[in-house]
Amino acid sequence: MEKQIEIILVDDEALFRSGIKFILEREPNLKVVFEASNGNELLNYLKRAKRLPDIILMDLKMPMLNGVETTKILNTLYPQLKVIALSSYDTRSFIINMINEGVSSYIIKNSTPQEMIETINKVHQKGFYYNKLTLKIINDEKKNKSNTAVKSVLDPDFLTNREYQILEHICLEFNTQEIAEKLSISPRTIEVHRNNLMEKTKSKNVAGLVVFALQNDLISIETLLKMS
Image (cartoon, rainbow, N blue to C red; front, side):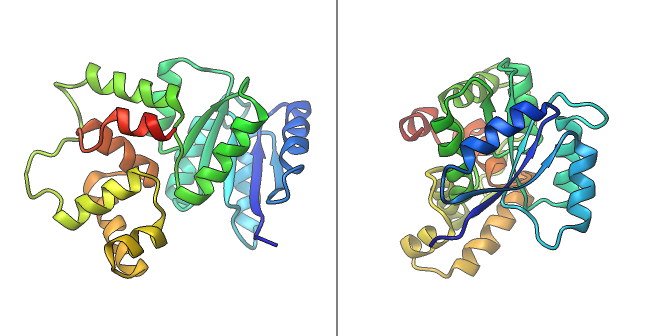
C-alpha cells in the first residue's frame, strides 16, 4: 500500500471541515491527521507534532489568526510545508495575494470534490498545481505589472544554463527524480540547483519558481494551460 498523504484542515466552520474530511478519507491515499479552527491552533499543534504533515488545506478568513497571516508564519518556521489555500473568495486580489505568499495551490470552495482531490495529489507529487483560472490571473497580473515587475532577469547570466533547464522541467511538473533521469544527473544535484534557484529568484518554494518563470517569460502561459 502506498504511503498516505497526511493532511491538516484549517477552517473555522466545523461542519465544513467534517464534510471535507469525509470526502478526503474516502480516498485510500489521503488521511486527515488534524483539524484546526484558526491559525493559532495549527501552530500550537505543529510545535508539538512529532512529524509534519504533507499538505495543509488553509481557509483565509478565520478568527484570531487568519489564513494569510498563518501562511506567512509557516513560510518562516516550516518552509517545507505545502499550503493549499481553500477559500470562497475567487477575486484576483485574494488569489494573487496568496500566490505571492507562496501557497502551492488555490482552490475555490465551490470546486468539485474531484478537483480538490486532484489538486492535493498534484501538489504532493510536484510541489504545486495551478488550475486554468489561477494561471490566467497570474498572466494578467504579469501584463499589468510589465513595466514595474519586482522580479526580472536583468542579467543574461542571472541563471546558469543548467538552472534554466531545471526551472523549465519544474514548470512542466516533473519531480526531482524525473528531472534527474532526464538530465542524467543525481537527485541531490537537482535539489542543490533548485535551492539555488529559489535563493536567486527570492521564491519561497517550487510554486514561487513557476510564478517567476511566468513573470519573466521563461515559460508560456499556453504551455501551462495545456497541462492544467
